[in-house]
Image 1 (cartoon, rainbow, N blue to C red):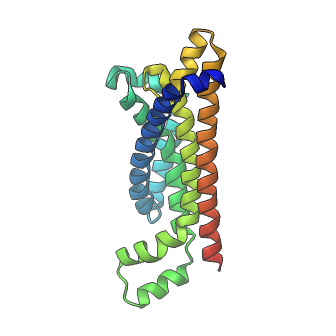
Image 2: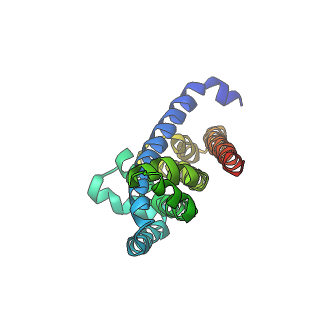
Image 3: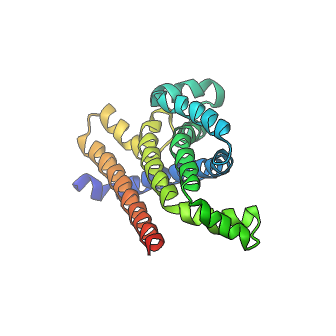
Length: 207
């Protein structure tokens, strides 16, 4: 605690880097997954192919993935962001597709009968009703991304993992604890926040 109080600025900078990297990767992954998931929900072959590719990427060990990207993009944040996007695709695409597919057909038919276009049905009916499932996937993906960002410090991507690895290298437990506990607090905070949003969405749809 004493080290943390004396060096809170280092922790704050590492936390900011961690959040920035994670948020960038998660945003890119969500936009890609939303586009793929909407198409995949209507085309089973695309869904199967996407899950096959995303599932393969998800099985690659984190450090191995980061190492394989070094000859292509080098060290740093770009490497980490690409890896995190790849790890998030399986979770997000699956949940987005599942959420859209679980929207009752009679509701979609009613919206179509009211004269809504396909885009209007998607934006005003399917995505809102699928939102609890989508947020559930986003919740898992967010925790995954935060975890991978810790490891990505190994390839000079920055973030809270830098404190952990530097603490290990210098045999300095307070620095290790500061990085590890802050990363855990970030992951738990994001998880609880998204869980609360998911519960609220489920209650609003149930009511």
